[in-house]
Image (cartoon, rainbow, N blue to C red):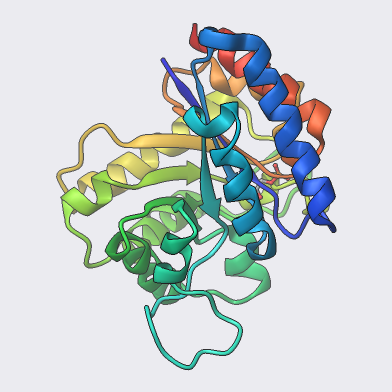
Length: 267
Ligand code: PGA
């Protein structure tokens, strides 16, 4: 089964030249693998590089394998909103995917469920595929993390609030990234989830969705401290259609290794 790799570059790299090097490395890999490719990639650069990376994708081998994604979208399509980027502006640059509700936006920048919900609707209105991030902040563990016995309820609440007012059809157009906040590499004491426990969480998400909607065949990704060492473990799980990679997606050699594994597993 074809696997999808989302490269969330966050606020990296610093220069366009470095951004182009990452894409070139992926392009070289795809070129060398020829017709054997079974992997799709979505590059989500910072806004400032989207246009150039889009041009680069369209001129390379990646034209058939890679798509352009954005890390955020504003909820209105027009208006005087200093600093924001609208859906129509992104669509004109060829953006096909947009990350919605990333935990860094929810918890560092104060994006509420209501804002996330409005951005999700903006992405759908502009015919983009939303990659909707869902994940609890803390979880009961034996390794000294703060305990939060309600994490299951919190996931269900976040699912209901995030998708509020959407039709089952619209939810079916979304890709859901399960990203436990405690597993994101930029958090102190972060560590990846295990595939078994992440599968348990996506079952909770499915259950929460099925309480209100008739959605079938949802696509799930796992994200949080994916590296060249553990990508394979999640990609081998049939429950996951792919992975959302942050830090490792800007380390070009490591990213190519992840693409290679994804492709071997898909074949
Ligand atoms: P990470 O980031 O892979 O660096 O943990 C994942 C994400 O933030 O989406």
